[in-house]
Length: 224
Image 1 (tube, rainbow, N blue to C red):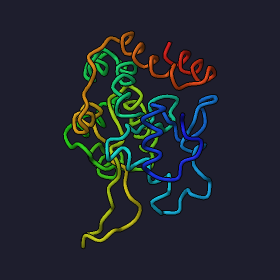
Image 2: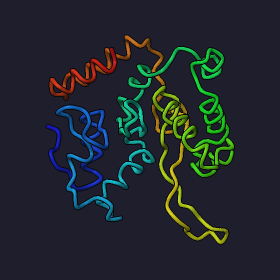
Image 3: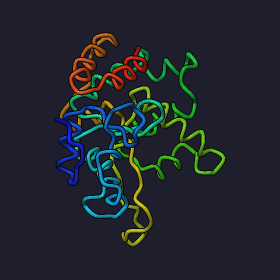
């Protein structure tokens, strides 16, 4: 039974493993979200019981892949289920082939290459490397990140503390990105060499055990 309310990191980790796909917000019909299974007053407290901090921790500790994998919404997917979702999302062509065919933006190609060269890079450094530091480039940068997450190429790996020249914490923590394949390997998993249809079959074998009919209908339409 999926917990209706969770209060600890350990409980949410177990819920993610059980449900498989846990969005941060409640946009999937009759399906749990991190928002719906946690007390409202627990958010943004900075305490260990703050769900806002859990989303990065589960990614860093390999409990779940974290990213905007569909509908441009932030989602947590269990380590066990993500390789199958990735195979469903992924194009058979490589990044280079997709770019050559006009299926991948120039910004996304640059971001992919930068993360490939420096795994776990934080977003501030990444924007600098790809030359998208100015305000006019932010929209293209954000779109590129979503594009790569929705194609199974990129995940959020966790957070890094921003430090000043003296090594002291300075400002908000910064989101870090990693290639999805490399993240899976680091966490003791691996890419599944499956066709999209084979991966869908594995994915729905799990979803049919844990989802309501409205949620299943949502996923069937999404991954048709």
